[in-house]
Length: 389
Image 1 (cartoon, rainbow, N blue to C red):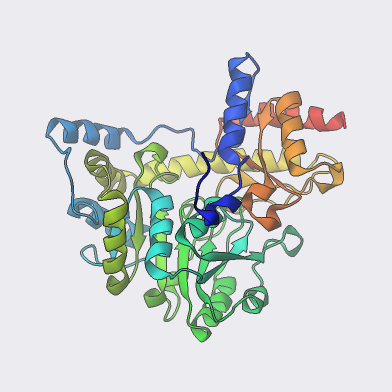
Image 2: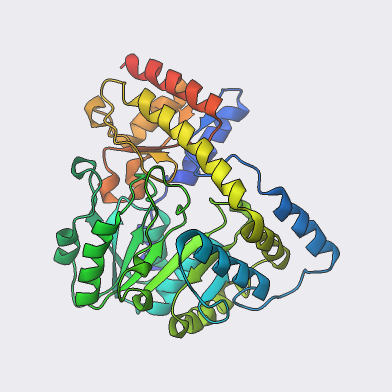
């Protein structure tokens, strides 16, 4: 049976999760597979959060909660955002807790945009952005961010793509898949254009803790940007809680009010006992984050130093997130063929760059959120496999 929704007919298949399924089949057949396709931290969730969930279940916290999340969680999130990043939001009216950042971005599009509106996003981008735009009935317009420009977002490229239908700009820093970080100077130029053209910004900051050598700056903290920015974050990466599905939106009260209305009709509320566990993560998880990020830096440094020595691979050292996005054009293979070759010959699974938008062409994404030993093994096997070409 085919979908009767014509918007969804252009939704691509053969993306990340299809690759994951193929890799699992090879693994079931006995092949040694190193999974570098899924951006999931290999750390367990914080013990204090898991213990809090057990306690919540035993105390019958199994029913509906406030649409925007339980008050202790909203308060804990806002205190953590102030403590770690200087973001100041009212926990009563300027936050909505949702079933992950993916729901949050989809809900924002459905709330703030009309059918046929346009949203601009730097490309390459997280693959769900384009699909969420299709579902919401809006058009995602891609702006190139290129390795040849050292992954700097050119404001003039944004300006060229603004039309009377443009309503929003979707930013992601630190970036998935390219690992770049938008610095304050770059963000100030973007903010100036946003204010001039009266746009709203969705700022996806899910990798805010994963920055190596720089400091995370949210565009919402720049002059006159707080009231036109919706900040999206999640517990998935920072606390290694991907399956808990706890994300949130921070923004002005007059927007959160309507966002909650749409969220209510998508998922009613987040899982009650997961919220109680997340309270403990936000209140007492700073050291957990710091230890995990320190280990990810060690892995990323090794991956970069190793892969950048391979003839034919072009690399820029990632400044944030936990992805490498090498240029593989010199091998004369499509991104999909390159990934298939690595999977079959080296047992290392990556994702074709084209899964991340038009400007992911010529690249593959490798997630270094595997053990250090796996990273070392993967680099050796990649080097050996590419040496045969």
